[in-house]
Image (tube, rainbow, N blue to C red; front, side, top):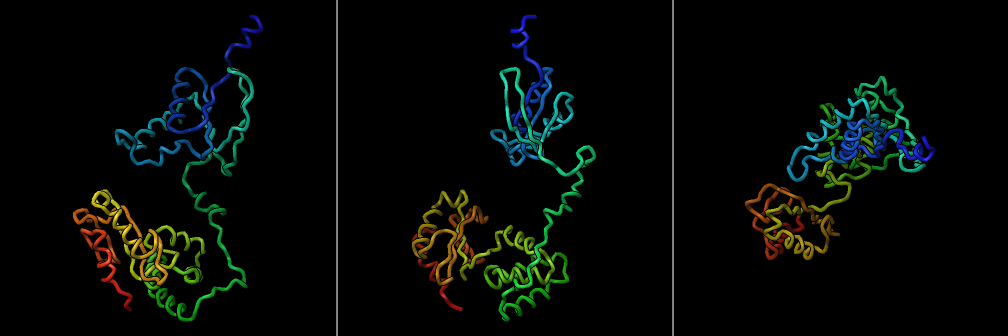
Length: 296
């Protein structure tokens, strides 16, 4: 066979970069055509962003319902080899004669013996690092705050899962979670400070910043938005001299917004603490603020 015909002949396999829904389907189509396929993805597993979705447009089908069959087919197909946790470093050659250099990052487990039980992740020393404060890094907490927290910790320490109720009571007491309080709770419960902070930052009910005595929460859900909730927010910002998410200098008011309070029939609606105020308008804002004076 002439040399130029040999050079033009396509040889080898196909490389698909990216293991999302498109990459998986491309790999399956190529493999069904009799081509050996290498499916490369930088993540530990294939699936891509679609795996994070609840519903997909335009049919509102479950994302996993769409992906699961393809995941199974890719895993079982004899002509598809998945190379995950890998990066393409270099591509050389011409069409049909590419050479690709791939760098595969270590997993630190034997993939042939892995059953996906998750025990290694639970005991991973990297994710379970416990911060031990140096001798000189003492917890600076006032005697009054120490007494308050001792009472709260004593109330919940012997219950199951005491951390969340302790943080709830502390948040209600101080209207936020001061750093010394978090450090003190971690020390008394013998927990890593990182774990305490993780819980404190996960729940929207907790705040690491000082908040006002009165928390004003305006609903911006569909019904409230249509009825003019945005104008109510603007009126509150003008009266209080702050923006959404901020607290007045006198620590009297904090302004927040949420997507739904569950009172669509009273739209537009807002809450001040636990008090619900429906059928609001920008003209009612001064009267509303007058209902919550700076009284102890």
